[in-house]
Length: 160
Ligand SMILES: CC(C)(COP(=O)(O)OP(=O)(O)OC[C@H]1O[C@@H](n2cnc3c(N)ncnc32)[C@H](O)[C@@H]1OP(=O)(O)O)[C@@H](O)C(=O)NCCC(=O)NCCS
Image 1 (cartoon, rainbow, N blue to C red):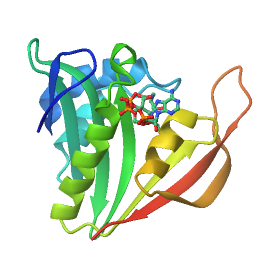
Image 2 (cartoon, protein in one colour; image 1 turned 90 degrees about the vertical axis):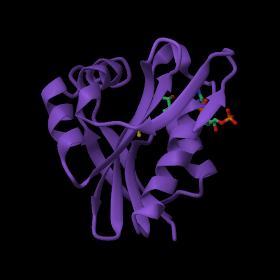
Image 3 (tube, rainbow, N blue to C red; image 1 turned 120 degrees about the vertical axis):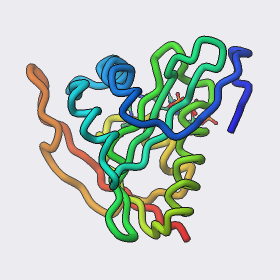
């Protein structure tokens, strides 16, 4: 799947595996206050229950963003989605999520869940635009040094 985003650079989304672990870890650390290690991504991306897709900048083959879910029978949980700061607001997050949901639907997944920081307006707006609805709340879920614990919203989308 190819797209020409606002920057005028072609970006393709495609399934990714453990070969992208180092890039995922760097991108994740630029996006979250609680970064995951390269070894965490190696393990996750190699696992058979994981479905992952990356947005690849076609000229340099750099990873501009990625999304990763863990699947169990007919349910999936989106564990993380991140777009590199320099690439945000170019439609990459939307493209990744759309293609990923199509991947999950093709695998027979019926329900998709995720958790999002209540203060994360960008991500919440993106999810709601795809039809995700809040089904729960986890208070004091995200704990980061020097900050008050943050509430996570649990969201669900039915597909298939
Ligand atoms: C959330 C994230 C993945 C969105 O990626 P993106 O490539 O910038 O998103 P897109 O350009 O495809 O935008 C898709 C929609 O998301 C929403 N959105 C994205 N950024 C937004 C912002 N800063 N404010 C409000 N809405 C925003 C909008 O609804 C947007 O649609 P629109 O452009 O038609 O208005 C990106 O901001 C990111 O990586 N954030 C840090 C990591 C993170 O918080 N991940 C989610 C964890 S639950």
